[in-house]
Length: 184
Image 1 (cartoon, helix red, strand yellow):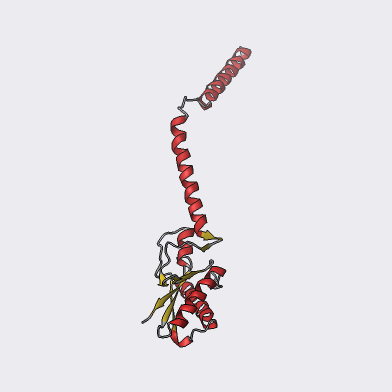
Image 2 (tube, one colour):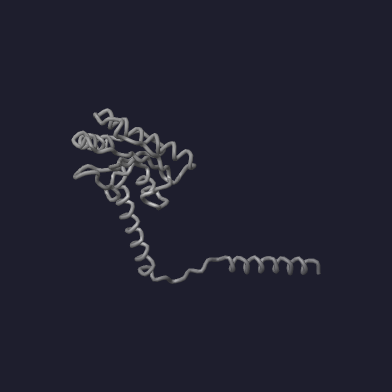
């Protein structure tokens, strides 16, 4: 009798284990592999194209595109771009500022305002100070190339006037800038 009870309990435990194992087994479902894969491939291609476009507009984290650039004069860009948390001029920025300085020397009656800008990250106070350092870096470079400091005014907008309101690396790189604006 005791042996019969042990046998019965063992059989119940084994049956329960088999049932639970069967419930946990993954069922394979036949899927048409072409239908779901096509949108994923298109999405991946779109993402790659988007990343290549962004990469073509940025060098490191500095914007080098031209879609947000306006012109101070014919062939003279009005803005220069900076790296994150930096006010050091890049090679491209120096070339742009040399062209601005040459144009300003030819047009000695024109005064300009240098606007310093930052991206949305960081506190308001930090970005205002950073924007001012960027505008002053541009001013110092223009003065090095013969533009009188009396003709240049500096103002910082920090993160208050973004050119691109997005929250991504490309938008941030467009917003880290100094813009030269004719004052008269």
